[in-house]
Length: 143
Image (cartoon, rainbow, N blue to C red):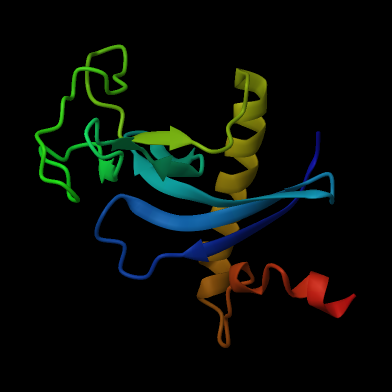
């Protein structure tokens, strides 16, 4: 597997842990969007794209946020005993959409994305800088 392109969108005034979004292209054939670059205790790291989990009301079937105590449709009290939890017993609020299956793949993605993130910071200081991240999809319209 070869990561043939990485596009980074820096977050201006990143007061929280989120530093940037990025996309990677694998083998010039497959794009994964919405990876997040987050500041960690040892520097930036890559978080895979994820989606917020939800649950359905046992009474009416309405889709509710996992933390909802009552159904937003019918008002019935929700039972949280069946909700997904991690190994520490904490409620799992998100699920990865795409992720590496092994450590070498994770390291390949991590090192390339962090390297491109650091290069994007340098590019952003140049006059007339524009992020290439927003141009994703333009190549399909040119064909």
